[in-house]
Amino acid sequence: MASRKEQKEAARQQRLAAQQEAASRAARTRRIQILGGAVVVAVAVVVVAIALSAGGGKAVNVNSPEAKTAQTHVNGLLAGIPQSGETLGKPSAPVTITEYGDLECSVCDVLATPTSFTNPESEQGSGWLDKLITDYVRPGKAKLVYKSLETASSLNPDKSAFMQQQVAAYAAGLQGKGWNYIELMYNEQGHEATNYVTESYLEGLAKQIPGLNFKKWMADRKLASLKREINAQNQQGITVSQGGSTPTLVISGPKGVANAIIGLPQKGYSAYVSAINSVQ
Image (cartoon, rainbow, N blue to C red):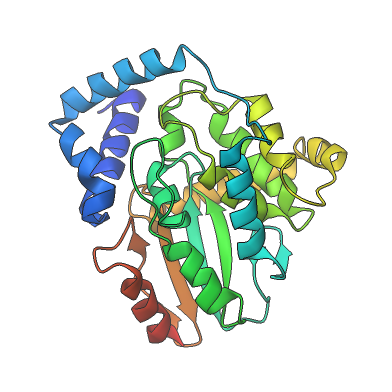
């Protein structure tokens, strides 16, 4: 019987393989180059993680040009759209788009960021999530729900990072600012498999959100109820994503639930449109 460590490594390899298969050519070039074999990947990831984590994470400079660009983009994207917890959009919207994500996942930020953005892994943003928000969420045709699924964060040398970053977003959600935090982190990620998710980084993101009560946000991050919610969603997400792969989008509506879209679909944005049309 495989040990817990072996099971976890096997699950991680399955996640990477699923992401590689589903991703578009631009987003998967880097992964194709590094996926030479399971043992090689395991060794390489450990070596890279140790080397890159030695420098630690950097705090977000809220006055940097990059941060200002992210703030402007996110504020414009979400302006005027109602939020409640981790839900973006009108509660009565007939279609629900549920994203299982990990805020450190470099493939998730390819989905979430505009085409003008390039992440630390040299992958260009797709603009697809922005378009879903513009085309469907803003006009009230769909609502977008974020749920937690640990994938890339498992490579972080700091094993508490996943819970820390998810709780930070959910605490912002208690003030109707959850998607502001989610989008800002996707737009200001550090390099995957490094320990950039420090307290100063998390606080730096919060300070970029207009109208967020920082003192309340700090207090709400201690709520045990948020951790229970995240743990429950993580277990659910492992099943929905067929073993643990992010992003996984589940689209449901009056006519039922479409097949989960795992990773980045090769058909691009049209894959989401087809799924939405099938459940309306």
